[in-house]
Image (cartoon, rainbow, N blue to C red; front, side):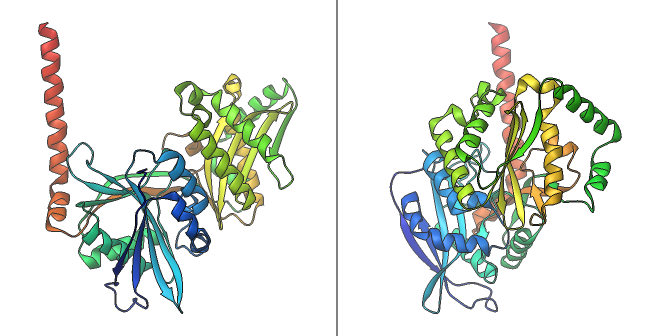
Length: 403
């Protein structure tokens, strides 16, 4: 993140006059320290957002900005209004400005997606959602200095998707779905047995029972969940150690491989626990964790942030065994209506979570003529760019063969 601090207020009025009860202002902040002044209002907004996204809440986003935004042009757009003389935070849009888009020399803003961010849905307050999004789109049209806005890693269905689609259509902004995929989401069945019968084949269930029996021959198996009286620091260190011993540690992508990333994980885990938002479970062999799952709560939803397992026991599929136990735990909890896997389409969890949620990236014009033209010609430009790269690679190969 840039070291300089910038706070600018841009006044804007919603184009939807029927919804426009209060004037909106856009406060541009690029210093995490300044954001601390908005934490209380930010937390209140998160409780009243049209869609939950813990990755953009204050306790996750501010530590991410400090640890993971170095060298990036990131700023946070705070959409504000005043009601009865009191300032109200209506929206939080973390954005990053990039000078190129997928190899093309086109300046672009995108929702900020750091390496540990599994969802980029902005926080928008219920009751003034259209006004809030209009204020952000107005800022893009007049202030952003770039022709494109990328709403990346956002739901392709639900309240935010419907709001964005409606506002873009009414405003006449061109758009293009550049990426789309489905990822696993958990929704409980009427009973646990019914869910497992539908989600997991009988052959697969028998195989897991066999692996559990074989693993129990090596020691005492126990499934454990973090509770309010647990030693949180021990659980956190166990997870960091377990992840570092896996392929993630070998590839350098485990939290423990970087001091900044390690500190980020510890900070958000402790803060989540203090807020009653942390879910951790473990499968233990003689007291030692062989698999652990780290999830976050957000209202009636939850988000499966990370899972790790001891690869020396890979034959027994400890991650899968823990996940089946997790399914049982979720069926016993009436406060959780669904859980986002936050996983890629090839993750093993797709085999046992049958429900899906659509995730997409929507490229949007900021309103200028050049912006609309870029959207129109982008598919052609990307095809041309790939063709030119292929020609360049072919020429390089031909030269190498001639040497």
